[in-house]
Length: 423
Image 1 (spheres, rainbow, N blue to C red):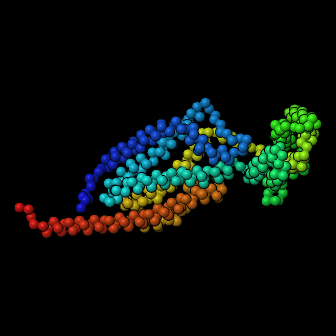
Image 2: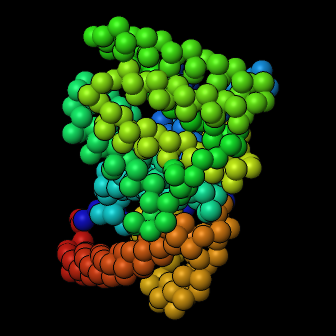
Image 3: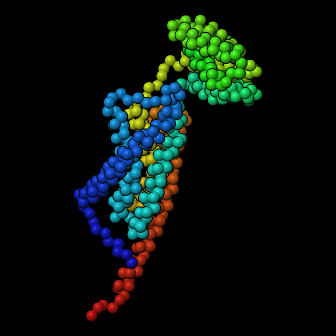
């Protein structure tokens, strides 16, 4: 039978041991953080992907407001990478600190505890990265009135550009099909257009976007060989008219620029004999895109300008928070194993715990929508309920082991009493 008598430590000795183990964790974090600095830029790029994906295509960049902000950001990335990498060390030191309060058989569970704790912590961080951050930043950085327009414009652009390439390659049928699909992408479930392409607008935003999209068609046409002298003449005319329209727009003559652009469009159409039908479909899709972009520009009167420091702090806060939330069942299990947490108590206050989870989620979640609140509150409640079940299991096992050890001790004492005295 194993000895059950344990050395009793004073409060100061317990605090001294806690300090020693905390220092070991700190040293592990610093050492692993320094090693992680070599990959700080790559780690930062991965962490910022959900942020950048929620920004408009033309503005997917983060800014820094001081000369040393970028260096501070990279140092912070290295430090937090050290925290994540040192999670097994921290869990091992925690187990060694509470081990004197465990039964002899329970102390051997250090391996499963460290493994499960590390997996839970990393799992919480991954859940936050893939489930919480994309929807959260999409909600924060896209206004409700324009988010739908932006999504449909993004879906339409790829099809319209592919249609233009197919038209230049002579695949007119596929080009017409893709152009019509791009045009339909700007409809909401077949109802109402984002912006009516049949209605010409003289707004500077729309004309500028129309010039940009026509310039792409023109570049694709110039890259292709033109077989006839008439075609080359019309193509040169289209180039000159486009340049003139661009200059007039820069001078503030928007209506005149719009008229010149239509002349350039007619010249380019004439330079592509045999492709007139495909060109009409492709230009209609591109013009519809320009109209939609013009409408989007008029409705979006604010632009996000995000700093590296603030976005990194927000992402890291949520990553660590979810890592700790997923550790809740494990922490509750350890407290139950050392006898500090009873199943009767956690079951009695389940309703209060659920309410507390919702309140904490509402405080920590930076958005006010129900979806993101649920994405944070539901995992917290699930982790708590899992912890309740584990508390019941470990409390029951602890009672059985204590009864078994007490029975073995009583048998040993009876054997000692019945044995003959030594001479």
